[in-house]
Length: 92
Image (cartoon, rainbow, N blue to C red; front, side, top):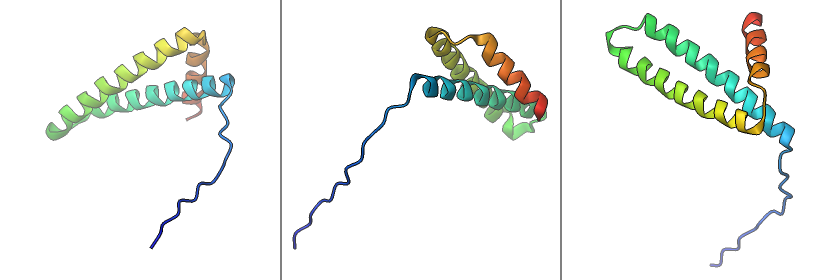
């Protein structure tokens, strides 16, 4: 019995720089929201979940620091990110 491998040819399209920047901004906003949630949950955590939320806070803060440095290197205005973040949170 012989197995043949079929490869579908598709063109891989790179994302534009604008799309990459938008994804970065969305990731920053999501990470800020996750960090805020972890802080709120930590405040009301019961004994067994304190370590879990402390880990969540540390992980999200590290991720946010990385993303913010990346945005800064790309020349994305951090004020713009904060403005988008504030608008999104006011809508919720």
